[in-house]
Amino acid sequence: MDIAAERIERLHELARAAATEGDDDRARYYVRLARRVAERNRLTLPRTFRRFTCDRCDAYLRPGQNARVRLQNGHVVITCDCGAHARYPYEE
Image (cartoon, rainbow, N blue to C red; front, side):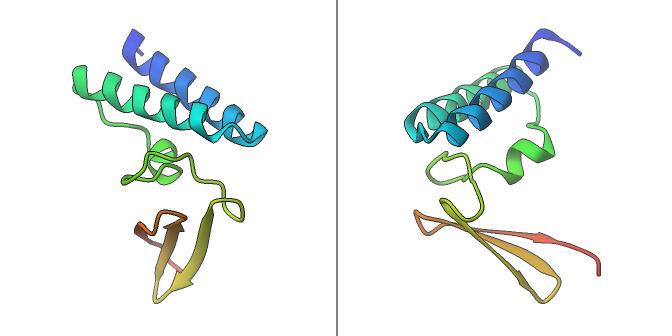
């Protein structure tokens, strides 16, 4: 694992911790920083990171706090407080 991937993982941990403490602005900063590191190094973000961040407002999503999670016709639909939707398929 190279330095950029390690930094992305560390920023994911920091974003999760900041969101848990209720510091949404700091969590959003960490998410934006991790996306910038990934873009500059041509890396894809880990799946867990992509699933728990909003593509529109860069918020770290916490189900029940700032995100709504619903199951709909074989998909998980995650709705952020900003109104953005993300759909992921699942197998029953």
